[in-house]
Length: 293
Image 1 (cartoon, one colour):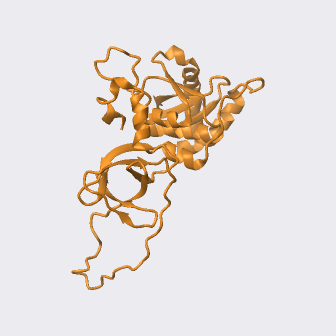
Image 2 (cartoon, rainbow, N blue to C red):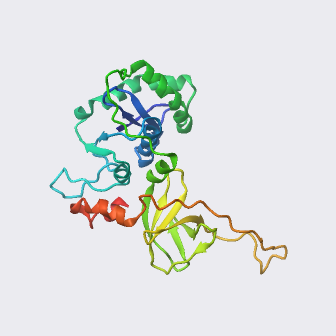
Image 3 (cartoon, rainbow, N blue to C red):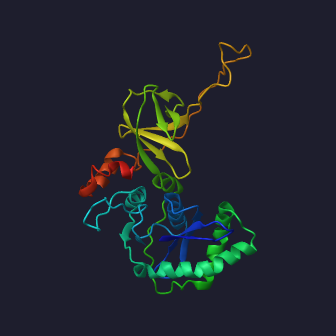
């Protein structure tokens, strides 16, 4: 698994994230993004999970998406927890790292092949933006593998059973530590959210209560409090469009609260689960905890 910035289409560089099966040379996933990002690798991982199942191992470089090296550390083998590594841990995929290009010969040769062919295909298709390029990749990957990948005859697959869509969506998530403010809300990316329970009602906690905010792969926001209570996060608008004190046409809407879908507790969103993952790497338990969130 690796990524390559290149002028794949147009004059601006984009980054192509890919994963290559080492046994067959098959392109198992590909995704364009503006730069090398967690979102790009999550999309590749999702393609693999949906089409093939859970891979046995990823062989990657030492990008901070996969591993994070503490500054001034003498041990270059020290790895730290990342969102991607935590998702792999939950699904049972191992990760091996190397900063030597020759160690990743399969994926490096794949980029050479793609750089000589894919820009031409994209230009012939009239594609000039990332969204269209990602749609094009869906059909291009199958055509590419039909021409260049090796047959599976006599090769035993090491992919585990494919997880269901809900587990994929909830596992390929971004987890962040937050605290409840004085308005019983949680601030996330300069917006305020209230916690909604399974009955559609807002839940209140004391100021300073610790919580985990989970942004699922599909973009939906959830919150886990006390390692057992799960809520949907609903954005609080900055202001109401009309005021019941000053607008004569103001009418209070008498609608029943909608009951949102709340995932079951069989998910990796407990802070204790995440801390156990952190504790397995003693060298960065405290100094890098914020970096991994």
